[in-house]
Length: 163
Image 1: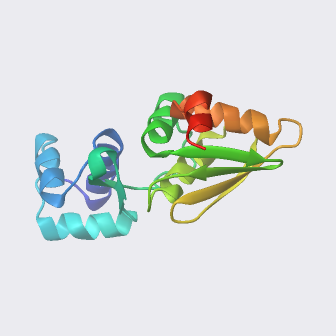
Image 2: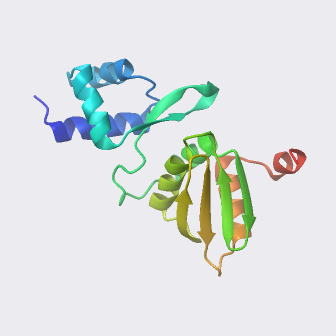
């Protein structure tokens, strides 16, 4: 038998590793891990974990847990994955950097950036589809914006032709 804490840790890991689009899908992935649970239990676990649905590729929605293990450092590959999937545009005006995402995704990107402790970022504030970053004065918003564009796979040329 798995404890509630162990089950919730497994759920958080599964959501971080897969685009979990539904509770039945999560139940199947838990079963593959040897954890049996009811949909009602999984629903309560998702609520306890603060899971939210965010848009992913192809317009689908998947679960995300923006604040799980907030002291954990987000690995560079994880940060690159989050930014490449959910960042649509990056602009700057010293000392601010503005990042635009699909609706409902800004908090997930902000959380990943906060955990990454990426050099040059003082802090983030997220709305629904826009987040603001404050850049350290010694680094500058232009450099932070360029770093974020690079991690997100946004080319400068594509940004300029969209204007």
